[in-house]
Image (tube, rainbow, N blue to C red; front, side):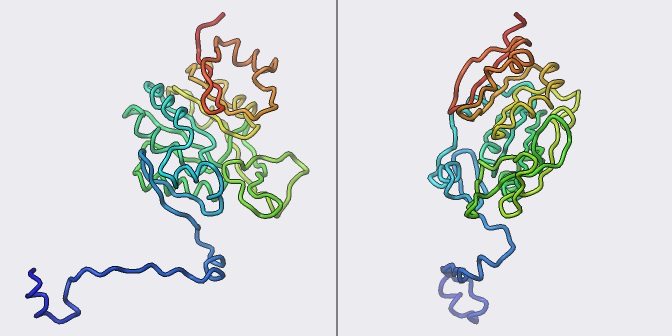
Length: 268
């Protein structure tokens, strides 16, 4: 409709474009809301729901700059995920999900695990923003048996730990910093029929338990295993790891952003 004809219409029927200036809620009112507090941002792989409580953490800051967190790890997984499903834990707000989902074969899935409730809700929204229909997202952590444990999600000052949230041992529960979480095993969730190409774990010192709950899947599929192990951990040098993983024919082949990559090279 021409500008002249629009002027002849009543103001209520005109379709003139107007700029709306966003108005912020007062800080106290905003903080009192029980709604999920988040921001939506984008990089080359897609869109993400970032939890506001952990915007100070490295991964959200990368996304806010339009970058990817651990791009070498992401590209390695994209290049090697063909022929099977991907197991990805902890998922955080879903910073790996768009890239992995896009790279998977059409008949394959991404099994994603995030026990922290706030992070899980953000990861859910990330899957919706990107229409990631091949992602199976679980609000759960990984272990060697089904259980209910406690996870530290905030420090003593109440600041979110974000992706550094971690399980606490029995007797150390703190109601001000911890939340109850569900634990499942990879073997029980994935089952004994799905092919698996990669198992990638960033589970904050819980790698041994998570691997123990995946031994049937590992023996059956011999997937690439990618582990982020904290400095000071002796897991990769332990007799258990040598007997349980290395003895199957695995060899360390790469290090990516502090993640150690193990690939099957045949039984020795």
